Structures are given as C-alpha cells and as structure tokens.
Image (cartoon, rainbow, N blue to C red):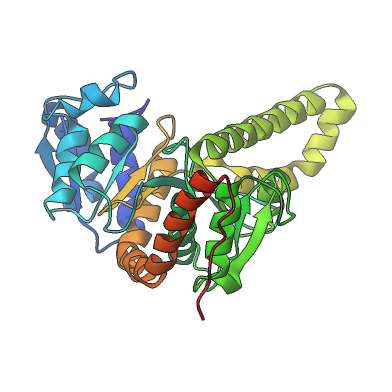
Length: 351
C-alpha cells in the first residue's frame, strides 16, 4: 500500500515480474477490498499472488516509533511474514524510516552485524556502482565501515554479477594519511582481510561517478548527501538539455538529429533502472522501492530482491563475516585504545 501510485503500481509491477521470474510466488499484503478488484484485472499477477488482508497502512509522515505500534499495518504484516519464514524477502515502496525500524526490530540483524546499512546501485562512467550507507547510520565506527565493505562486496557479486568487485572508502583525499582515525583504522582492517586484493584504498567524491571502484563505502550522513547531490545533478543536466534544445529552431533540428543517441542516454540514466535500495545486514531480504516510481521501477526493485534470494545473499554475508570476525574484534579493541590514548594505537596484522 506504500508509494504515490500504490496499490495499482505494485500490481502492475508484479505483472512484469511474473514474466521475469516465472517460478516465483507473491504474498500481496494490504487492504483486500482495494487489492482484489485490481488483481482481477491483471491475470498473470493474480495467478501467482495470494492476498493477505492488512487493515492499516503506514503513511509517509508516520514516525518510525509510531509505525512500530501499528501491528496491523501492511508493512508490519509483510515483515512478519519474512520473520516467520513464510516469505523469502519483502519489497515496499512505503515509509523508509518505518521500514528500517520495523525490519530491524522484527527480522533483526544477522549475527555479527552491528548495524544494518542501506545500499543502492547508481550509474558511473564505467558501469554500475554500489554506494552504502545511504542514511541508515549517521555516525559510524571502523567496525561498521568494515562490515559495510563486506556487505557491499557480496551485494556487488550477487546483484551485479561481478566476480571480484573493487572497493573504496570515501574520504576527503586518496592519500593514506587523509581522513580521521575511524577511516584509517577501517582501511587497515580491510588491507589485512580476505578482501584485501579488492580494496583500492581511499576514493573521493568524483570517483563515484567516474566508477573508480565498483563499491563505495561511507557513513550514512556522507552517503545520503552524495546520493542526493548526484540525483540533483542528473536532474539539472536533464533540465538544461531540455532548455537548450527548445531555445531555437536550429536547436530543435539538432535535437531531431541527436534523438536516437539522447534516447540511449535517457535509458542509461533512467532512475527506474536503479530503483531498489537494499537494507543490508538484516536476517532477511528487505528492499525499499522509491515511493514515486512506476510499475517498471517497482519491477526492478523486485529483480533486486529476487537476485538476493536466489543467490543466497545472506548466506554469503555470514561466511564472509566469519572470515573477518577476528580482525573486526581487533579493530574494535584498537579503536577503543585510540580513544583512550588520543590516537596512538595501530592495527596489528597476522599472517
């Protein structure tokens, strides 16, 4: 029931998903009186959907603490289905804060994960790039950043199909001495870990669009600013191009000549291709669709969820966290020492 065009957008998105994922079955959670008539007009979706009635819906302005108390909401019932093993994952276009809060409380985090992170895919000059965290954690310590890097690595392998994605830590410079103690300690931990060959060190803001690395790791405050800045820049470029091509008769003729190329550019930068932010680190697959998307965009969010389920995303997270657990414990210990001594501790590495 979440999203500007819901619930019709969700059901139309399911019509697309049925074709892409013929073996999947869907639990459609919401107001049955509204869902049933819409589903009857979409026979492909109806054939693979079961409606579960939920009398309440979480509004976009509902605070997470208030959303937690509404046990009959479609969001809560859907998340309960994942926690109870009835569903492998949940996709919602509803309130982001409420979704993260309810999922964290009900599904809980994976063993060994301190905090869940929000990750998404975006365009770059060299292909798609994964960026996390996008706002779930405003402040992070070194352990959080290392966990984000591990989860980002698995996400890029699972969803983008990369065998050994490169990973960068977002910083104010690429030099090793740049940044604060948290970033430097996280970098040292990653250099001593099993993903050291993939760790490219520090990257800067311009490296995100350049595609310098396949995964860019940062805290939620910085990541959210970077995401919104990138979205604003893309919108500005689109608006300026429209103004230019409408400015004169010559410009309109030029547009007609360039139209095929501009269409390819539009498809490449289409935000629906990148719809579906993922709550990584939870004990279940949780994907957040943009609230303003259409059926095609929602179907893409479904694609992301299906990829994570089919390729056993969380199982790979557990395996990688086991391999890196000792290093993270040492990083946490050294981080505490740094706070006590004013930054004198360094990370010791073992062969």
